[in-house]
Image 1 (cartoon, rainbow, N blue to C red):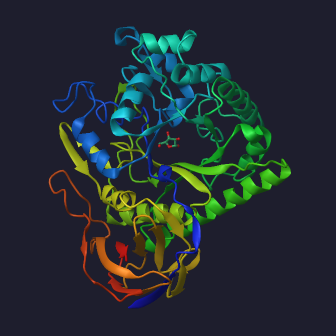
Image 2: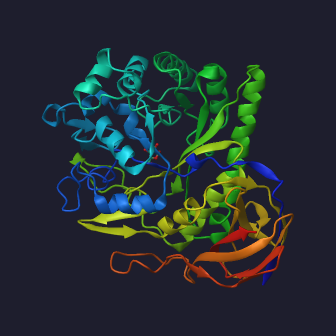
Image 3: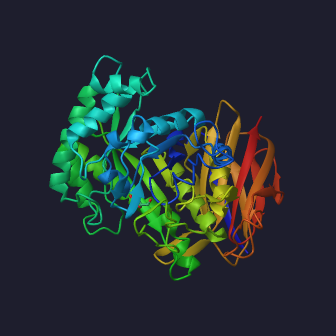
Length: 495
Ligand code: AHR
């Protein structure tokens, strides 16, 4: 048995947790759009062709912001192909995933979906094969009042009122040789600066996200990020971070070090942002937009072989993956002062918490982890004092509980998220609260004795959240015992 003591002080506020940290990502990739969220041929489709069962499940996840249309797809996408009467939209070869794109789903369908789902749209422009002007025209199409060419086009296509898209990604993973139109940092920065200038001239309210490194593994990390931000200056508001983690070695001591690795990636890019701010003598800094994150290594089928909606990168998620999902979210909450947007990549079928099979729907293990966090996202992130036993992650010892805490003074509620990283030992926890009186505490746990346990279409509830009862409280403390490898959320009502 290991033990951990947590000190919780409501005055130790890191920052308000940005609701946009609980975002998702829809890419024209495999079966994410077609046969995923959009499937007019399905008996479960609504009047717009959206799958009602998929939407209902996604509503449970309470995602706030949705990135679209890619991903690698964005770097070859010409948005004008995806608007207007369907019969006039071209069917094209899609090169990022070697697929066929019919363009049946495009900007107007995405915006309609966002309205139905109450998602803030986040659009990635094409800075691979597209031009800065094409990006600027897209802003006009989405955001301008009618009276000029592209805004009028939107009105003709059925939307008189502007969509008011606030968040715009200046391309995708432009540091990666796999990207259509990949260029060195200097050239990308010139493209992105030109695009951002015209986009903001068209609508000064928008916020732009420059492409940062595709991952901490990139040889140009973090020099790429520095060079890009230094050149673009105040025309970018955020820098993007991406991370996909793997467990090829089947080693929990490596895999469960994810929280610490994400912390480090965030802290390096945060430092880079501050360094650039100083270099540029700027009043504003760039914030962090973690617009792709997930676990991805089991299914690497990426060649669509010239098919429409091929089955690509449909990862099956097990229980240990759900724990790692929690570690990403803990890290974003711990860095609430700098991480303002994050997008789980992706939402259905493609490396996703949901899977469709014909008219059936499956909630994978990671669905339940994400939900545990997202339904308690309102409030301030508190800096916790942690002491106790350590977990020997491959890169060195880390606290054996991976934690975060959100406190809402208004709602008189505090949620404490704890992941026991040890695959073998229980952890006994004592949490001391300073200046807060506990009225009631209830808990939820995600746990399975087999790290490899999965949910299947036949047996959907192998890994689901359950009530956690191994908990007691006094007026100013909580005590509990977490089983090995478990994710627990405690909800404390404050009197
Ligand atoms: O999410 C899948 C792919 O991963 C995205 O298209 C790309 O940006 C990243 O490499």
